[in-house]
Amino acid sequence: MMIGSSIEIRPNAVYTLSEVCQILRISDATARRWLKAGKLRAARVGRAYRVLGSQLLDALNQQGPPERETRRAS
Image (cartoon, rainbow, N blue to C red):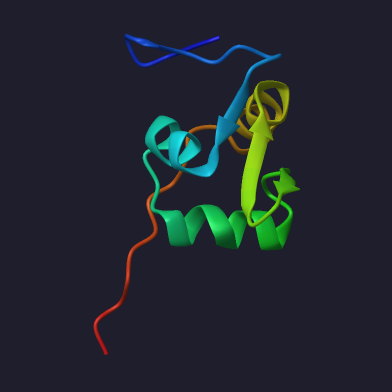
């Protein structure tokens, strides 16, 4: 699957959390919230997370385009 004009997600590839953040254009904190909430599945290797490309594709198909989280002014 191609995202944008130059990023291809391969189902059998393994991505780091940093790579997932770049692909989805989200922050590290947002990716970790998605992991905790179950929106994104990953395996823990030591202290790091690894996301299988097929899991990333499943998350994209379930959620559609990633939404930007906005903060409200208090």
